[in-house]
Amino acid sequence: MNDQGNTNPVSGLDAHDDFLQLLIQYFDQTLAESEMKRLNSLLRSNAEYRRQLIRYSSCAWAIHEIGPLHEQESISVDTTNSGVTNQESWSTVHRFRLPAVAALIGLLVLVTSFLIFQTKPDDPERQPNTNARSLLLHQVTGDIRLIRADSSIEKALSGTKVAVGDTVTIGNDKSGAALVYQDGTRVVMVGNTTVTTGGKTGKQLVIHRGLIGAIVKPQPADKPLVFVTPKAKLRVRGTRFTVHADGGQTDLSVREGKVQLTRISDGHSIDVPGGKRAVTGSELNKLTLLALDTAPSEWSMDFENGLPSNWRCGIPVKGNKEAGFNGGVRADRKVQKDGVFFSICTPKLWKKGLFTSNADTHLHFRYKLNKPDWFQLFLSTRSFESNRPVVATYRFKIDKLWWPLRAGQWRTATIPLSAFGRVSDLSETPFSPDELPFELLFSSKDNDLSLVIDRIWITTGGPGRFDVKMENDQ
Image (cartoon, rainbow, N blue to C red; front, side):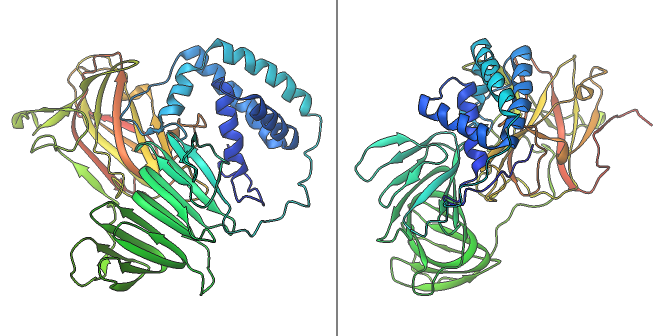
């Protein structure tokens, strides 16, 4: 399925995202009558959307047959479901039952009749609006609230208009959204982030807290886009950057272009060019340029010194050097609202990422099972790229991971990241290196998982295919 969609020339909004949001709400039986009309209109006007609906229906029937997908609070599929990956997305899948399937049949009948028509051309009068104050929310996933300037509160959806003085709040670290300006400037907000639009022309964004990534189109020299945090003011004329802000400090990383950072406490400024970073807090030391703090392209964990304190789940296991095992981690039992899960999960490195990836990045892990146990791997990601989900969850599941069983036999799995398929939107789209992995999860539901992992590591280069080798294999 094409993940990019078409761009609405008026709003700058990815029209495919709007369609997908409506479709998920339809399956979830939460679509209002006015939104149903909008969905019908999109289906009438776009043949590709009609084809996608047919494909989604097949996936929906499969879900109905096999039951709910794995859902766990720690998974960032809570894109929250509009990304872990999303909580809302997972709950949408979990609640999808016979009534929605029956309703889908009716819509499919309607769509089938549409297939005889040609796609209508775009309205020639739909020209870009140059009003800089008009913004739209794009790629909304999870718990997003919009606090209007008049203090009214509403749940935000993709396509929601944001005016000067409005505040957008991202409810948790499984949620995300993008603010799209009329000139194409895109500000992505992820996890526990709150921003307010300001300025007479709407060219100011107050970041109260959280993490944002921005791709800013060239701005007039006398009218830069200004970002204000509790500790600093950023003047931007066209660049790509990320900034993490809280009450204690502002951490700016510039990928391309240049950003002027001014410390509010004393007015001290510094120009931060592409490839550099600057951090300011309450201290009055001289501002200096720093190297970018990026995740490594290769990463490993061997558990010889126990389980790190920031790992979200897992039980440390003592090693046995005579058996070639210096320590590991065993799946931990956690009771969730929809069942019991046995899991091993890394820390959630939301800001920096767990590791960076390339087209040839591979995941490896040495493990053993004491009984036949199925389990799945989930990879949670975030992205500031316009053609990728803000937050998403990918899954890998092949029975060769646990079968044929040799109880207590160590084996090593090698999996290219490209073999992971996106489950947060049901598309099974392959993982892309444009996305930054920030959490890895091994999990099984309602199954007393005997999984013990000795070591996990990430490398670039590899066979480009999934493989499992037993310790005694030649």
